[in-house]
Amino acid sequence: MGVEIDDPADVSELRGAPESFKRFVARTVEQLQAEEKCPGAAVGVTVQTLRTDGFAIGGVNACGGYEALWAQVDGTWKEVYGTQDSLDCAVLRRYRVPSDVAGDTCYDYKGKKEHSYHQA
View (tube, helix red, strand yellow):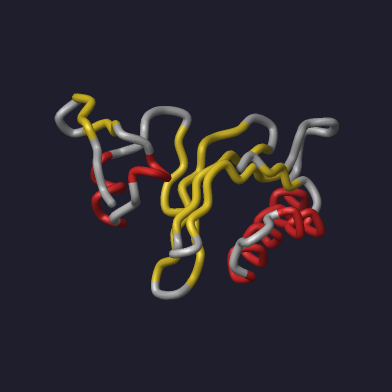
């Protein structure tokens, strides 16, 4: 997908996305812009992969950036994990994140080991 959202109005580019996800992304971008402390820096959200059943992954940019994992929890979109490293196996299992969003490997930070990951 790879849709960059640097203005709340840009959520219209998220074709096929649920309205609830568009509102969540727009609010996130508004919050990032309000808290922006690095003039001239890229500020916004990039949506890489979205599943309409409640999972998405992408990037958050503001004076740097990180990979964000978003999920619908109790009917509300939220950021469930953010990292500049590998996705945490425990988080992926807790939220039952599909592999087509999270990829096929994750990292066990307690056991300090990478694992194969599969969730339909």
